[in-house]
Amino acid sequence: MLEKTEPQTIAPQQFAEIERKHGANNYTILGDVVLSHGEGVWLYDTNGNRYLDCLSAYSAVSQGHCHPRILQAMIDQAQRLPLASRAFRNDQFAKFLLKLNEVTGFDKALPMNSGAEAIETALKLTRKWAYTRKGVPHNQAEIIVAQGNFHGRTTTIISFSTETAYREMFGPHTPGFTTVPYGDIEAIRRSITPNTAGILIEPIQGEGGVIVPPDGYMRAVRDICTKNNILFMADEIQVGLGRTGKMFAFEHENARPDILILGKALSGGFYPVSAICADTEIMDVFEPGDHGSTYGGNPLGAAVATEALNVIVDEHLAERAAELGEYYLERLAEIPSPYVKEVRGKGLLIGIEVNETAGGAHRFCLELQKRGILCKDTHKTVIRFAPPLVIDKETIDWTIPIVTEVLNMPQN
Ligand SMILES: *Cc1c(COP(=O)(O)O)cnc(C)c1O
Image (cartoon, rainbow, N blue to C red; front, side, top):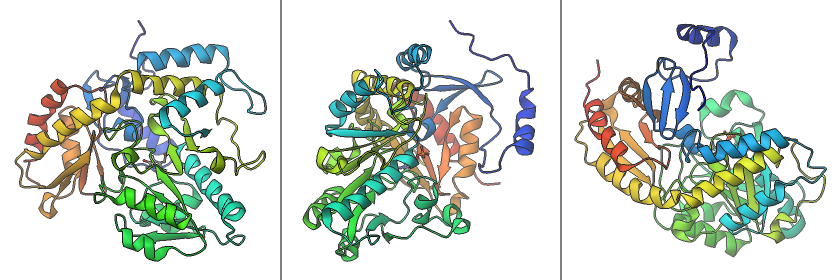
């Protein structure tokens, strides 16, 4: 058995001060918990206190913290060969491709590292497809995106963010993107021109505040794309791989995209692995030299991600999310509170939106933290509940009185 708590050379009360002094100030830290280890749905701080993780690193840890099978795959591969160049073949990459093919149903995959890199990869593939297959004039390709989107933090991706803080001071911005209201199919129709190459959509907007689009939206996007010869890119980095109660969120409406974008839970929290998946005729738009990444598809990442996918399948995590998600949403929706406006979500991605009198979602998250539940506010007014998919009913029940108490605390 591993010793779980590292011997501390820095006193826990010094962490905040050191980070303030020596770290970039690009994150707001919620509360003053200092985490040191995790197991399953639980996280532990340096004082030995236990917390239920209801953020799961934005769905990256759907399999639960330190999943023993993924851990073992990582250790084994780290001892053999963590990285070799993609210029040479390695014995883990093909296994990973076969697994992705089996799980997603797409012919081909192109692995990267972060989610943002996978989005960039999808955008490049879509643009080149437009120039070489659709006949869009050079440098004229347009891509439709949704208001309230979150696709990552690179300069091109923030160029089409509608969040002032993400975008405002980081121009000049990359052109070629058209923004439409999320969930509005007519707006997409009106925005299509002969130069439209693709549409990039999240099946549910997670960072946008757990926004579930109207029924039939994904299906309608699929149909519009087919009819107008446009590529449908589904960003399933947060909602894919079981989170919403299906392996992929697009399955709820049988709206198979042309390019499926995965990240986060693809490696179960151990190591950054992302990927885009597409069928041969689209993926073959890329030729040697068009794209690449030093770490993308490396043996360590491939071994970790293969096992992370095995765990999702073997432990029926999508089915668990469907069943427990429905139960959790019902239980949360029953909570009497003067501050709750709406409880919504799909599977184990649930948002509680608080109303104008609540004084924001942040204060509730702080109180939940004091009582052993780690949640983060998103979009100022939404408390997101997205625990690892290995959570059980008993643990869900344990949270209900705590959430009830906190949601009835007046502002002071
Ligand atoms: C997290 C996220 C990304 C970006 O992933 P990174 O690994 O942080 O670059 C993109 N899209 C969605 C929907 C996400 O939730």
